Length: 136
Image (cartoon, rainbow, N blue to C red; front, top):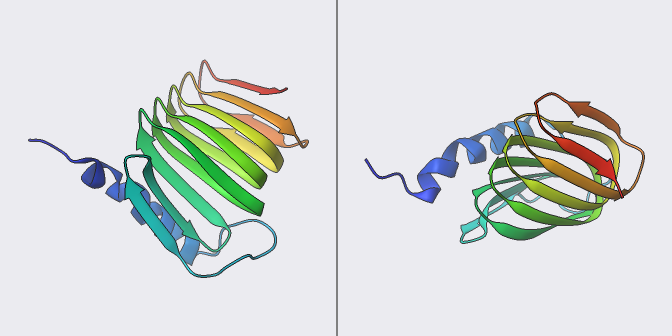
């Protein structure tokens, strides 16, 4: 059975919708209109102040704007995140995420993920193994 990338990402999109409906997110509102995109750069769902991105073997740029929460799922992604993130949650393996700024929490589940953040003083929750989370 062949699974398309859209089929593989459907659970991530469903989780994003549930999180958005529950009112999860950070500070300040830029827009309440949900948006969703899926294509060669992965699937991204934005509801309120929460962005959920999921993909496999993707290089992408994501903008947290002025205080959005970011959830990342999948494996072998290289993400450059600009703007100010309130929180970052990563599930999966072998992701490399570089952030401009994150303030509240960085939570990493999974294995061999690398997170580098340039500014902020977030609480770090490393709940997996082989992860690297550094300020630099």
